[in-house]
Length: 279
Image (cartoon, rainbow, N blue to C red; front, side):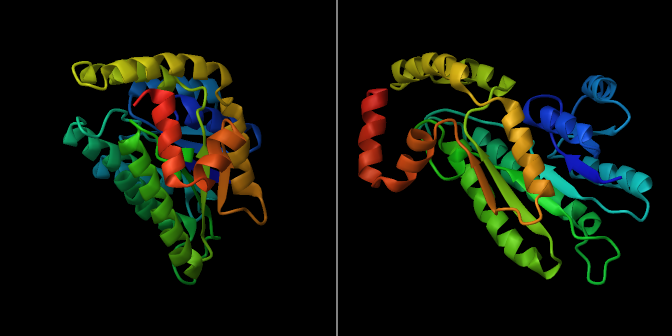
């Protein structure tokens, strides 16, 4: 039996990835924050799923989960760690509460390293370890390379995750442990439905009309959002491929959503964003 850890499996990418990997014979340890979610997901995914009850920002909870895993694994190690848990905090940086930025970075960056550090021994990060080298899969975003207006905090966290992953991959060559990034565009998950509520706090700012228009476009974007199963297939590829890539971009639209924003001059992109949003 091969064992995988996935953070944030109560819904969305984490849940579907757990389902997909279990169907392919893996045993999945999945983190959730609520007991009710642990029981629900356990009931839906069956015996090859073990819930881990902790918040990714809770260092004590993470260590407790590691002890729980060790009692099940015995002398065996992990095949992979999938750092999926994360949040998106939209809003104009001019008005974004600093505590919101701190939370964004704490969950999307700091907790990823904390969990990774805690699990590295189970991934074979010890000289002469009897555990075969595992892989670390970090769920980034197209925002890890492209920073759109009003998504600055989220983009900052994903840019940081990309940089941290590159450094970590090069450092962990000592142990043969690979670090791989998945870079999805907009995916059909519950996080899409939170945008409208999240931007209400900026309704008294000069950006209110633009944000209201963006909220409408988010509704339209749901129709063309990526199916979550496409991300699950990519995660499986990153785990199972004999020679995985360092990055797997999965944009919603390859030309306008990935190639052009990275290749065009900054000023051109500025003008395109201004025209689209009415800035």
